[in-house]
Length: 505
Image (cartoon, rainbow, N blue to C red; front, top):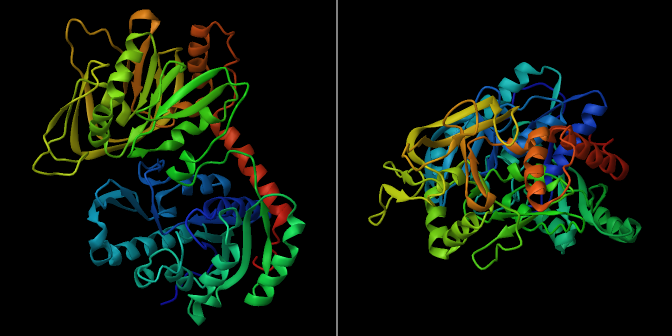
C-alpha cells in the first residue's frame, strides 16, 4: 500500500551493508537540501542503538536522527525515529515506540509480536511530521542491508518504507571495506524488479587517494547496472559523530600534542557513547579505551560511561579485576568521573528487584555491591526518568549547564558519618563528588551531554591540568553544538564537491 502523503519526492539512502556510511550521507543530504532552500525531514523508521537522545518533550530517539535533525535545521523529535530498539544482551531488546518504552522483546519473537505495531508507529510518525512541515521532503535512512533475504518480508525500515513513499533511493557502498563491485552487483541482483526501479543513483563512499583512479570502475558500474554513479565520496579525516559503538571503538586517532590522557572503561553494554564526542574534539585530550589487562599508571583520569546493563557490566568489571584497579587508582589520588550507569556503579549498593538491568535467572539476585567509591545507593524502578535539564553545577566551577536524564535507577545518599560526598548540582540526586586522599576526586552525574557544555568541560580539563602543573586553557569556548555545526558543514562541503544530486532532487 502506498502512502497518501503528498510532499516533495522522498529520498532514501540505502546501504550495501551495515556501516556503509548511510547516517553521514543522510546528514549531508539534509544540510545540502537546507542550503538549497528546502526543508528536509530526516526519518529512520526503525533504528537499533543504545546511543539515544531525549527530545524537548522528554521522549527517546536515536542520537543519529538527532544529528540529522540538527543538520536539517530542526529541533529533534521522536517522530523522526518512531521505532527504537535498545539491545540489552541475551538476544533481547527494549522496544521504544514514538519515544516511549512499550516492552522488551526476544529477537526470535520480535517480528511476530511487534511488526504490526511498529509499522503503525512508523506511519504515525510520518503523518505527524508531514502535518507539521507541509512543504518538507523526507530524507529516509535505511538500516543494514535492504536484501537480507531471511528478514526481507518483515523489514520495517528499508524497502517497505521506500515503496510506501515511492522514494528515490540512493545505494551507498563502502569501498574502504573492499569488494565494492560485488557489494553493488550482489545487492541489486537480490532486489525484485519493482524494487530495483527505485534505485536512482549510487554513491561510492570512503575512497582513499586520487578519485580519478576510479574512473574506469565508475564506468563499469554504470554500464553493468544502468544506474548513474552520483559521485565518489573521499575518505575524510574529520572525526564525525559515530554511527554505532563499533565505529567508535575502531577509532585510533592519535594526538601527539595531547597533554592529558583520559581512559574510558570499555563496558560490554556501553550506552550513550556520544557523551565522549566533545572530549574527543579537544586537542589537549587523548582518549583511550581501558580493558582488564591495561595499566592505569599513565592516566590522568578515568571515565566510566553509561551502560544499558549496569549490573551485568558491574559484575564483569568485578570478575575481570578492573574493579580493584579502579579502587587502587582512586586511593592513589586518581580522578574518576562517571555518567549515569557508571555513577550507579560507583555507589555502595544497586538494588534491582525487577531485573531491569540484568536478565532474570535462577542465579540472579536483587542487591549487588557497587565499587563503594561514592556513598550512594541505587534502586531500579519500572518507570524510566526521561528529562531534559538546565541546572547549576557546583564543581569544579559554579556554572549553569544543560543535558538530559535517561535512567531507571534512583540514587540516594547513604548518610553515614564517615561519608563526605557533596551534591554535584543544586538539585540533589543528580550527581555527587567526593575528595579522596592524595588530592584525588571521585565524581558522577546522571546528566548525559554534560561534556557538551563548553565552559564546564574546560573547567573539568583545567582541574586535570592543574594537577599536572599545566597552565589553564580558556573556558570561554563554544559549546559542542557549535563544533558539531562546523563538522556538519565540512561534511556537506565535501559532499557537494563530489556528489551530483541534480537528477535525484
